[in-house]
Length: 608
Ligand code: F6R
Image (tube, rainbow, N blue to C red; front, top):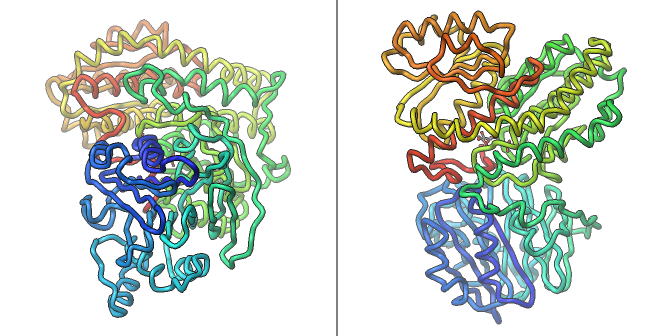
């Protein structure tokens, strides 16, 4: 979704802002703009469509002189993706320029009030009220005007502001939308995402909601909402620039699929010491765990699918009820969640609006909350009682891959850890599962090695306009993610179905040549799944099966087979999803799709 950058220092701001916006392109956007301040004047330029249009229009930023400015990529919510609706928005007297991420919920009411006061609105955006409010409240004291403006806003917002009267100064405001400050030498930055900062600095300050900051080339001062100075610690980002670049791959998605063995290793290895699972960041005692009667896992999209996998594993091992529920449902459902519930929240970005809202709702009901998050310092990580980070590194492709598999790995570690603390598994089972988890990076590499065969299958099947993924138990949970991967990047309709449920209606859609991808790695239910394969074959379907290595029986049933490396049944979802990520990737490539930036999608869904 929208991206924000800000720069103040000794270099020309325009090119630096455009470079930052390029690094945020992956988040999804449909227009862009920059504003640079120079000797009491603000120069702004905006363009709809690709960022390249703005680069051409401004000669790569050179047309906007000045050493301090703000930039924005907009993902349209209020108003079409036109140049007028693009940010920055500039006040009529030219004194203020503002960029904004998030949604100002009371903008209609503010717009009416400001119109009555004589302000003229040029765009359809909610953001424009901010620039007029600043104009209205500004009487020479920038900080006071910012505080008065922010006090009037409801909703989620991160703001970047420049004022013509304050050369070299940037204002950054954070309220329920991500914003990170970057400390350089003789220059300072802000951005909605560390990927826009790491080519300049790895020293960052994470703002809390309600805080705002003044940045100049000499330093950064952070204030709370009452205007009191707040002392902040400086964090060091562990990601480097290369991690946020393509490194020779044609697409970020392919690079990130290939990175999974490394990401899994980084996530698992530090948590297994001398054969024992050690969960730094989790302060749940054995006694507290014993008091938990129910586990609820909540998240959105692929993170929810990881939660579905986790619910099967955790319930099987811990023998307590575990449910996964999408966050956008949970938050509005008056759920039965209380002090005896452990709520596990999963999010790659840590900034997904529905996930944050569900987490807040569960906390308010007294639940113990544990977050599985990739982005350090993100809102979800800050809100939860306990945090387990996935150490996947930056994920740039919109379609998650390493984010998902590392989430499943963490859920597996947590489930095995809890099962042992609760006394529900014996030592042999514990050791076998720990060894299995430790083998995931190597098994994942073996799944990646199926690459050439998957490419061949993608060529063969890329013309299907609609297909099904079927499976049972953990295979079914993996189907959910496999189906989403395919549809979001190749735009081919697909559905994930619990195989036994097909005959209750959906089998009506199975006809001659329809592709059914059958996941049958969960061997305890292999025979049951084979019955479902026979049912669809009898109606003319083509079957591509994903089975565990060494399963010879599948040849008699399927038209094509992909073999996933052999694993403990509870750990198969990590390895069986890998060839299906590759399948989605190569099908989308065959069909000429924009793989890293699928239409209508944004990497981080920070609005409801
Ligand atoms: C799909 C995908 C999305 C995200 C979802 C949640 O490939 O990436 O479905 O999983 O938007 O995002 P996070 O994990 O950042 O909360």
